[in-house]
Image 1 (spheres, chains in turn green, cyan):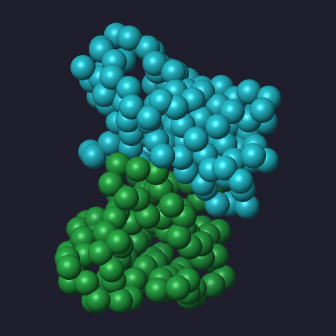
Image 2 (cartoon, rainbow over the protein chains, first blue to last red; image 1 turned 60 degrees about the horizontal axis):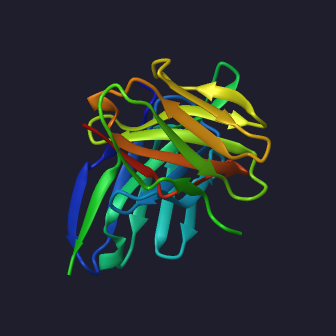
Length: 113
Length: 110
């Protein structure tokens, strides 16, 4: 499978704590993206990090990328109840001349009040 | 700009029937991709259309087909529905390497 793998599959923390999710992938990439999905709804793009970048910030989000280990992490600081959602990493692979976006299995994050 | 819209939002069909789902991309976006999401298999890529041509295809049987119109709107069709086709079907338009997702169509096959 070319899908990335995410770790952990589920994470439950208290409001105000930090949440860290990890993603590993299998082949070379141009960029890696993180998406959020609220229960049973569409995905929302959070952040894109390019292969020549090591870290990127957006508000309370921090994404790191280690291309030597083929892994990325998403850190959400000072978590809020509204952060409860599933989080997916996605990578673009070039397959038979066409780009294909491949998603990991996701991490289900629950923020307890 | 309006976001990606999908119709219908919910659909119930029985085995053997066929279904057509519709997706309207963000204005100006020419690429539309379709995904199937199930609890067991996660998010799986179905196909991508660009300027009315299928540019990429996932590993799904021929019962799954799609098309794109000149205004970039896209439809996907599933014929001879099976119970395992019950899923959330997501459409996304893309621009600059980033995907913009619609709310999805929840298909239930009985």
